[in-house]
Image 1 (cartoon, rainbow, N blue to C red):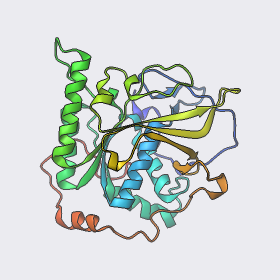
Image 2: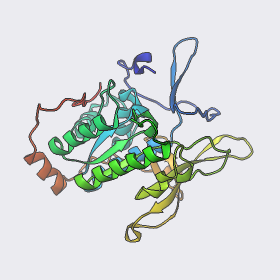
Image 3: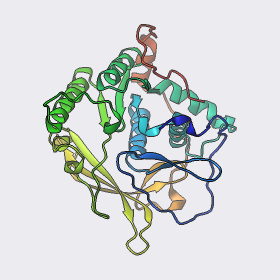
Length: 311
């Protein structure tokens, strides 16, 4: 589906409107889709997995100075995704006219988050070539692939889906280890019974999504039993932790902060949510200083990587 279906060039701000009943719409395969209305099409997104990954990468960036490469057809049009990162960092609704915070956040995203965007070639090989370029030229330490089913896969004749996924995960794992980076792979479960929490074994295609991953978690939105409406509560089910000194299995109970897309501990009520600007008085990490001073831009590789903000 073409991202240009909605004209986003005139976006100035997003604002919260009065509460109305919200219904969760589930569509197999396509996670982002459009509703046809009398006036204009409306982008609809089942928030959850991608939203939480965005939250994690912004925290990793701020805490450790890790730069991020993003391959995410899930988040097209990119202007919307860029605004989501902006809200998480600034702590408030996206507003281009708020010059006090916009310029600071804009510059930070431009220098720390990079998109891999070749719409004519979404093959695994091309995405990893783009990531390799960003590792060498920008110093990224994190790669997000969101989602698995939007990649162009090269399954050989006579090769079963299980065999292909096993090889694909080996390629991804070896790339991460060889380049010393963290890779987030977002994958959707097959159609589930309502209310049941999916596991890594429920990802369509192969049990290897559990067997060959180092760390795996599921993002589960809570549904009210009586009204059948989605609540603001989110459960993060940590289902596989390969090395026990880095954590263990369990469940994190959280609330989704609709002011900025952050995730709050379940004990924090709405009045204690963190709506602060994370970039204010932020000190540069030593790793950022080293990366920024030693890596020079190169013109040798071109994959449609977005070098500037999509506004």
